[in-house]
Image (cartoon, rainbow, N blue to C red):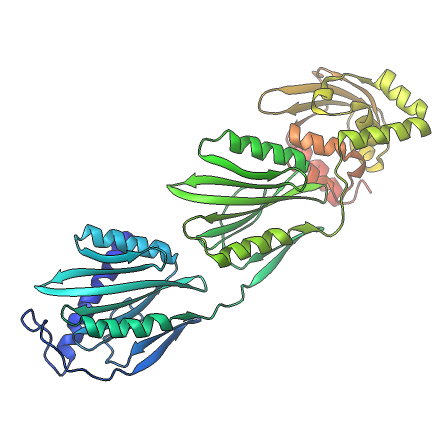
Length: 460
């Protein structure tokens, strides 16, 4: 709703009042008559109902007005009801701004009850208007009573009757379920967010709140650390809470003068990290919005447990392998791996080679290449390795440097590399596409060629 529309709505009370007054059997109120008493009458009421919202209104003649859903008038008073798809508090604030802009006099306003009462002058007629805003089923409803000055008693009787009668029959929120492999999350059936983000799986919004689900080929700890560091380094954001044990984050941010809070939950599933995020505008989110937020985040989960690879767990596996196959590990340590560059990032190159060489699918893919350059990069630096592969697809050499005549160069973001290497034994035709989403190859078409072979089952 624009500021202009708020001004139009403000003026609608005056227009309706004048039109209704002209159509009444009794003469319209004039500036000389407005303070004269009116014969007291018994006012009967009917119930207005729309989209779960109900409120009483006087059984007066209808005075139709474009853009107003209900308007009735008795000449000296008008009652009207209208609804909009925007937060009730925002509508209230816009009307306050419009009143002030028109230099009208605010008698009383209450932000808690979203009520404003003000006076205005139209063609020498002093008018008093009381407006109240309600929220109901993702809509805002404005109910206003406008009377000519001198009819305050009648106005009070009407206000005391209709405003307490306002009621919202809340509808159950319609939830849908999003699935991606073993991951699932339920979300409200809101409008679609059009976003070209490659990592975006789901985006829904109702304006005040949005639900977003992204998938990252990374370990949850790395996503958690990346997010918390980015938040702490942004002057427009502040970290409210962060739990590295269950990977939840809550932070405050400002966007276009609006104050927002984002609550996030990271779930490791399908060997990927799923980031579910609910963002709401602090000033306009309702209790129901908070309940929806909690339902969405609580529902985000995985149908089965995927073990998260960590340096400790990999070291434990290495001890087991050394006991069972000591000669294999010795060969890898002594003859194959000739670099320790990955240690600063927690990459155990010996175990990476072991997992790859014992992964039948992985070795089938690698058997198409003999010399491979591997580049691991992040924002500050990159590591370069050259990898020699035999005819069986097994790694026979891993050392620093690069080949000038490599068959292919693999360029992998560090966050992806940590997840890929930690899960080298879990890479198969079903999981490869997820692991390879951010991997680039030179020549570029080699990546697509490998993917096509996987889809055709040539590596099975």
